[in-house]
Image (cartoon, rainbow, N blue to C red; front, side, top):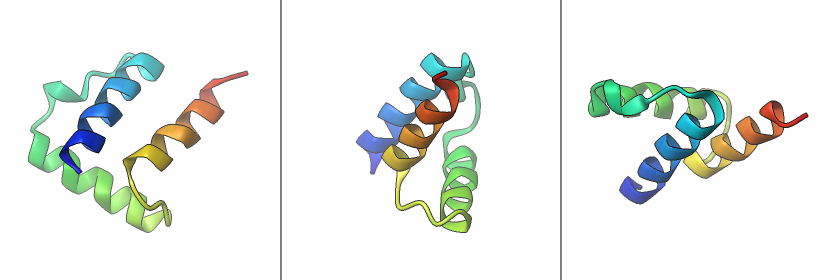
Length: 57
């Protein structure tokens, strides 16, 4: 999961300009994991894929 998270934060910065490295890693991971469990997403790559679909017109 560490590699998936690192790739995720890189992709989020590319897609949104938001640098998740500015936030405490443990807290950000908890919040993101809670989000993807709540939304029935299996892991960070799925979130990234869905965000790309939303941001691509």
